[in-house]
View 1 (cartoon, rainbow, N blue to C red):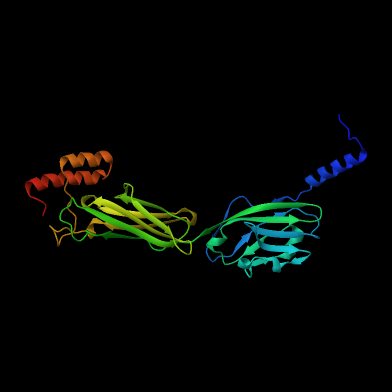
View 2: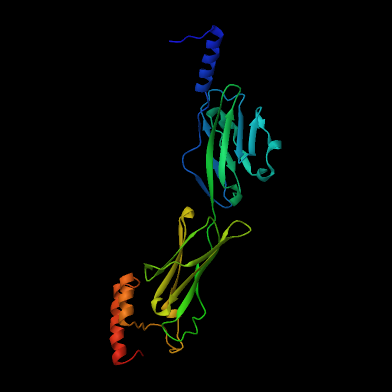
Length: 285
């Protein structure tokens, strides 16, 4: 076993080991905090300490001073201007090791990681809190762009537009036709000046396949699924100006292709077969 060359070196080494062992244990929780825009949220921070005197508590956000408690009082003169009037700290919780900070009027720019520093003349420690922000989206709508009102036949393509706005974070948009996932759509999701998102999704599909189209906007963080539908009852053709699109005709090859790809459910497939034979005999009225 090696021994220290001199007694003073052993004392220094022992002091360092003791100091490392006495670092504050700071706990801030495991899961991210989720807040709606405009909410007040508590950034949790607890530490183990036997003596609350001579404590310095500091909250930082990406190098910015959010809040500072030092020399037994708040040091608000060092607080960044974006947080002035928006923080509340309960100093009476320090003897119990509570250094939590309340942040009010949450905005999208507040999203990110916050660090809680705890320090006194002997020891120090830190913990991190992740804050996520949610803004609910507005109503989802589905409309049919031209040529919905100027169709010459059931073989024409129509373009459906799904849109919403004013939400955060970026959503996931899905289309389905009669409950079956639709082909890929064209999306235009843009970030606006206030960092919320505007959503537009286009789906091009043959008229005879519309039946019931549904657009779903998922905001997983907000746990919201917003839906809007567009059915064939809303579409008319030039050949049947006063009739709604309730008669769907398909040729044999098209039926095989559609069934193979799983585009339509079995009930619609049966309906198309019956429609095909009826067209041969009577025509589609």
